[in-house]
Image (cartoon, helix red, strand yellow):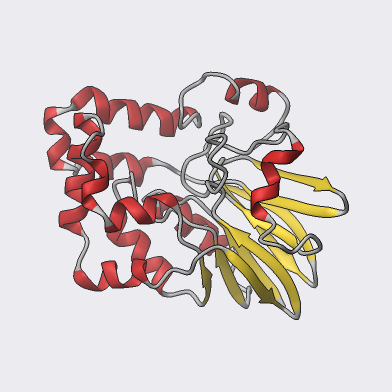
Length: 249
């Protein structure tokens, strides 16, 4: 059985479509959260996800998509973008997002795995390749034998701690390590392999121009477009520059 494992689309249906065009013979999917925000292709993203079968884990951006009050203190540009996303989503889209599952233990192809988004550790914002071992403890959910699949930090990496593997497939829609790549993984007979596909970002850039509420926040919109073109979705800053120089995706 072949399972497509991915996370962190963030409203970049262009990148997700590139992955689905490349990988056509998988049996099911594991999506580790953060589907539609903050990105300019929310409807297209949900349409693609809704065509797939598998396990869909709720991320922190599912919470913001379903709880508009959560953005009250966000910067004005982000609030304008989120308000546009709220208007774009239909009732069926919200129902689909509500159907996502909580992190926990799941059986995949006769094996147990822990599936998590990756934001569960309140001690730190991102669990990264060189994070202290204790930062990974929160993902175990009581099972110290099952491999853990998680996202959120947007970096492809694997760590083994006491014979337990912690695997991050990277980000589909917001690369942070300086490449215009959609990153994901394949799980087949218990073996996980990392993959990526380069995609043309032009449709995504055009989609940003169609977000009319950002006409008042042109610099904010341009910053997102530049992040897309550079592959540094949080900016060319540390620790992302160091990870890029070390070959991470």
